[in-house]
Structures are given as C-alpha cells and as structure tokens.
Image (tube, rainbow, N blue to C red; front, top):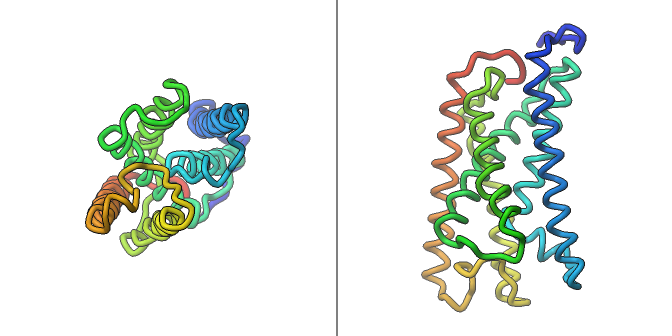
Length: 213
C-alpha cells in the first residue's frame, strides 16, 4: 500500500478523519462522564458499569474510530485488523441500537441525553460512516466470523455472573426467566449480530478502495 503524506491531504480529505477523532474522543468522554455519575453515588464497580454491552462497545468502537482517524491524518495505511475491528464495532452498535430501542427502552440510570447519544446517535454516525464513506473498509467474507468472539465472551461472562453473583446488565438475561428464555434471547441477539455484520460487510464491499483493506 502506498503511504500518503499528511501534507498531501486536502482540507476536505482531512475533514473526515478529523471528525472521526473528534467523535471518538467525545464518546469516550461521554462514557467516562456516565461512569463518574455512577461513582458519585457510591457505585464504583467498573465490572458492573462496563458489563453493559453498550458501554463496552461504545468505548471500544470509539477507540477504533480514533485510531482510524489518526492513521488517515498521518497518511499511513490502515492495517487489516483495524479495518476488521471497525466493521465489527459497526455491527455491534447496530445490535446496541436495536436491542435497546426494542427490548430495554428507557431503562438504566444514565441521563436521557447520554442514552440517546450512546444508543441512537453514535450507532447512526458509525453506521453511516462505515457504509457510505469512500474509505470505508472492504472486508473479505472470510473475515465475517471475527464478529462473534467479542459478543460470545461478553455473553459468557454475563451468564456466569448471573448464576454466581446474580448481576446481569439486562433483565432479559436474568437466570430466573428460565433456560428457554435465555437460549432464545441469546440466539436472537447472535442472529441479529450476524445479519448486521453481513450488511456492513456487503455494503463495504461496494466501496472504492483508497486506504486500508
């Protein structure tokens, strides 16, 4: 891949990666602000706060967005693993938006504006960026399976916590609801995740390649 000097980037070419860095940084600050609010009332447990799929996924995807933007601003090629992480983050944020707005709308202790930013605004921004940007990642269908490890680890940890210390982030994952309910919800979420990833992978494949994979 050809390295492009940052000095060669026009103002319009710099605008998009700079926006990614700004948006990613803003989301990290929003998540930290939400955690600070929890800490202020005595709930300092980071395992509970970051046990929410929304908080984890928003934080990780924001960091990916920052990295993508910084590399582009520096005129450096985007490594394959980062492009895959970008696609996985977009797919997971689709799940965040759909699950929150259908299964658990209006729940949680965060201020309403924080919920709107993390469950609607940020997923929409990342989705439009990864689907419509000229430099969006072109991902091989052989890489689609990378969308599964992170959510599977998250689900496993949540289910183990549910039957040990009784904490789960979302009511539909409570052990008391029965094994059938848990299985149906987990299968449904994973199916939604794969569909979301397929959409991201499929639309990404139509993009002209300027950088990355």
